[in-house]
Image (cartoon, rainbow, N blue to C red; front, side):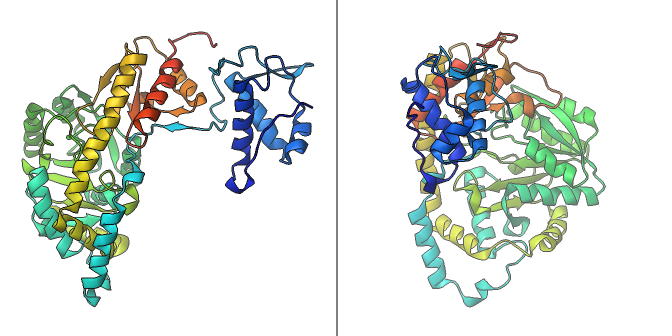
Length: 463
């Protein structure tokens, strides 16, 4: 048996993935030439001292990607196209594919978390906080943070927020959960969402017994006339940077949405998604500032700092304050105090806003890298949502097969989000969502190059 030179780092784990990548690299480099007959799975497993199942899985994956071909009676051989790693057939969706370029939207650059500033703020809190601060937190959150958020949201988001109208929550997801429960208890069993929109949020609503209606979006944001036809008296919107299309709700639609709420005794739930990151001008003020009596404003530090912080807030209309306060009490007795006080210190010293300014420049450079690479490698694509946020909505060239493109990109190690999963009834061109916050400009350029190689027209034969 030819020496396959597959080196395994047993301390790193994921041996199956290492076997796959080692064989793939041996084929790409030419160490295993076209036509080479691979050893039996049993023989290779014994040579590498791994389970036979790992080798079987590796062979099946490389067959799916086009590196190997398996013929009855002839064994498994390296394909003639081994020097061109582009797969000749769509991979098995259930097979494990090593993703080297994860462009999942909504994930910030976790390596950019301001560790030094957070550590300094935490030390200050531990040195100065009174002992009583370590007791059970108030269900609505630390008074210091609610006061700091009222000031911050008023200055930065043009919100009309008073401390007594703010409840600190464990991220926007918990805020949506609490609002869902409140709506159900108020007899509002139908909540409308934008179409397309996040399927994760829709799952929160149905879990709490709400029926979900759908209001389509266009170039101005949510279609308010269509919303009115749903009969819903509550709606979730992402006006600062609609997910996933990247549209900013237009002034005309903002006015129409507020008018809908007042006319229909409606409630607007505003997910202030990606509001911190606007690149062409100052961020657009939040919707809550126009109608604080009709809007629940939800925000968090998940994109600004990190989702693992689980720090968020809900700015509530007066009729909902006591109800949400009670629901939060029953949920967890209140959010952890020390992170709240640390954020207070970050806001008081200006460290939080300095971090945001640095991250805007950081993400803008990454956005530019993606846009430039798309113009070079996929010029027929149309790119939307460039003005804000940390993701792009990319319409593939007309006639492209969206699902085949996503599968093919995955086989090349690039993960992108297909639009089909985010549409309920809306129709539209084939498109993908690219999250660019977590990768360097060079890696983003390489990912786009591989994505461009993956684009297939509908009904195209494999290969």
